[in-house]
Amino acid sequence: MDNEIKKDQNRKQRDGKLAPNQSSKSTSKNTDEAFIAKGLALACANGQLNRSITYNTPSISTPLTSPKRSKNQHSIESVYKSQRYCYNDALTAYFAELKTLASKNRQTLRFITINLNNEANIQLRDVDSDSNKKPMINLVARWIRGFEAISDAIVVMEESPESFVTIAVKKHKRLHIHIVTVMDEEGVQKACDELLSSKSSMTQVKSTWTHRRPYTELDELEEEDFGDIPFDKPDPSNEHWLNTYKRTTYSEYSNSSKTEVCRELPVCGRSVDYLSKDLATPIGRGQNFTVIGLKGSSMRRQQMYKQGQEIINSPDKMVKIPEVLEQI
Picture 1 (cartoon, rainbow, N blue to C red):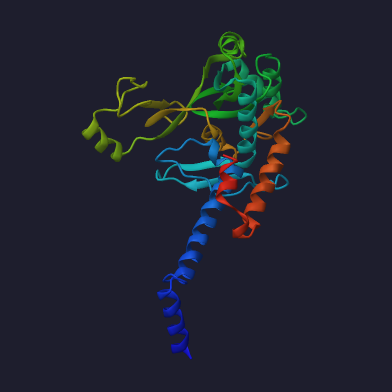
Picture 2 (cartoon, rainbow, N blue to C red):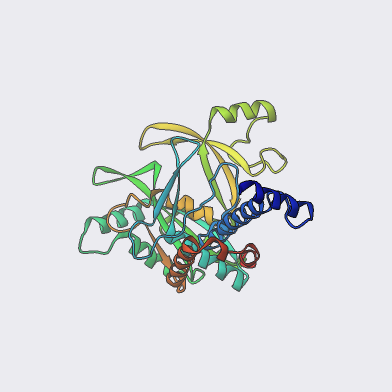
């Protein structure tokens, strides 16, 4: 019986009615296309397309978690063992909304860093020590809302490992603020001159953000082949180390120094991934981040979550590459 079936297949192949392994090749091709389509669709839904592509940062392949769940934080082991790559579903959705606003209003995404002076640090630590008062991040948000050039923003508060403030004999790590927002050139100048001017020891407004990683033996080997990495700031004439520099910092808090390789990148989804690195460890009471404005961010988060679930749970044949490409 098997021989008769084989002879029949050979006859059909001879007559051009059946190509060799046609069925298995077709199935394999369809499976590959479905896998690629699902990957592209998920990249549309989880914010991966908002992240710049670099050789030492991972692609994010997980869907957003439910907004009702408290666990929004994720981390991936980095090639640099002392450093994990972190990302946060809430910040991912907030950035997606912010980027849409930037495009709609024809404004530029900005990354603002504010080092708070001693007086502001003392004020925030005093607030944190009083359980009858709202958390520190609420006060920070109130300060920023008073600045008219910022209507929509992601705000993250961090502690500096390199500096400290002594309050009532106790050493506290110095606080600083990062703001990701949209702003025109006029707003940039106002921010440099006026944003939290009475509370800032340094305000920096950029259209880039700085990716930092440890300086390693691999960098030493690369320097032997391509010359030294520029020190303290990028060298525009250095094609190999374009937008890259190294710096050595000393930490008063830990009495130690470290050398990092820094790279300037356009403000993208990876900038808020970077800001999520310490969100799992609250500074005092409450969260370390908040948003200003961004009225559509909750709906955006819910939408991205639902899209991810639909893609993960859909039959492979239901996800088509051409339909996905239309979303990109």
